[in-house]
Image 1 (cartoon, helix red, strand yellow):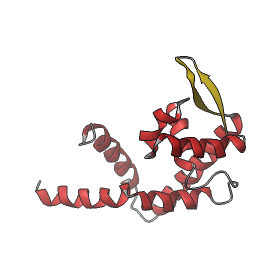
Image 2 (spheres, one colour):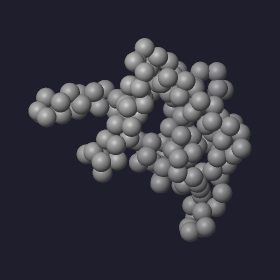
Image 3 (cartoon, helix red, strand yellow):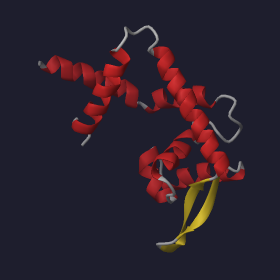
Image 4 (cartoon, helix red, strand yellow):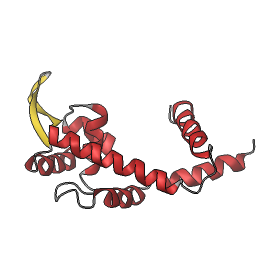
Length: 147
């Protein structure tokens, strides 16, 4: 395998990992989800769904923001009833952001929309290609340069 393949993969990953690419996708996915759920708060909801209750400081690296950015987005989500704050049992001065039932339903809707969006983009692929892509992407993520 030549370095050309590595360069091609790196170029494509650069596009996928751009903040603007993610924001555009998040904007599409959150249309009609309510004022508090948009391309800015989507990463916080998604991260909380993946990780469970976390402080703003713990979430910050996962969502690419500083602690105050996560706190602002968390406050919007809290006002909408999607997130609640609870005392951090390991640090009485800190609070954890926790998805509410309404927040969990919103995340489920967003995940359903994302899966449908992905499947629509793969509709023209030959039978078996999407499955192979999913397997290989998982393998690349688990065994590739990110580990």
